[in-house]
Picture 1 (cartoon, rainbow, N blue to C red):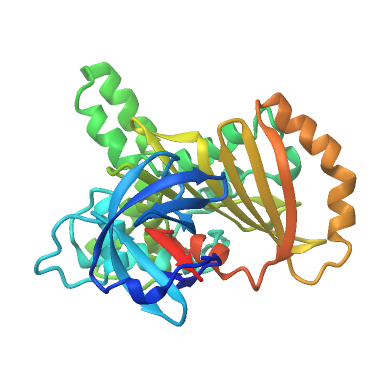
Picture 2: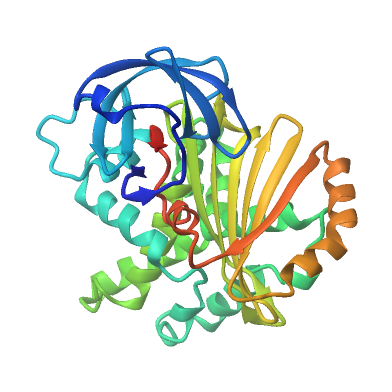
Length: 367
């Protein structure tokens, strides 16, 4: 079956497709669900195997419409996927991305949401081009902000990543809004702190270029600013029940860029994401093993994940050697490592699309 053009695997036994009518409205009950989004649902009194979005839970009931019945495939679209779409000239996937983040329908925002997932992960491809445009101090400071792989640990890894993203200016506008509520002295301190972010320095440099009549709308400064702003749009978890976040983490390995992409989908706990019910996909470019993908599913205290690579026949043996240490590490975090599998990175199209911001959004069934 297909969701947003993604081919997903599933199975139905003893269900005749001729009983399903396009546009038909049906009540779905989730009978059982695993941490990998696989589930048994009950429709018209029949139990059917399906793939569900991460935030769906066992026992949940919701209405769907039959979206497609073709070639032994069945697509059930959950209602409501979005608010009214009248007079909105964007494709459904783009509209859904805007709605989930509470964003206005703006062509510039749509472009940033669309282009960011395909952009280079690290900002270093821009650094050589901005020589002479930004000060040497700016470039050196930016490089120092990027974490080094060998310096990361379980004690400080998350803290270093958060500080890097903060330095780039991912919460720039949020801090501006909060600054208005501060007293005069605290406001001045925060203002000076904001001036140290790379987003402020880029905006300042672009404003200077515009004043001199030398700004290039498609130049390297504009591209770097778009990269940061695009990350801001994907970083926010949004306003609806099902949260999604896409991160391009800058990382260095012995001074060389080591691109990392992370996508997280979960149920929402207030303004935060639910780390006990989520899917985390990671793709990292390594020197020895090439591109590595990790597709992890957290469900309560249980964790299952799939390691994806390109043509590495020795990978299962390598994983087997580190399983005891890995299981012990997750146990300290409160998670039981239930299952570890391997797979081909290029053939796992659903994983690749998930890292591009295309999520499961409905009930997918294939006979």
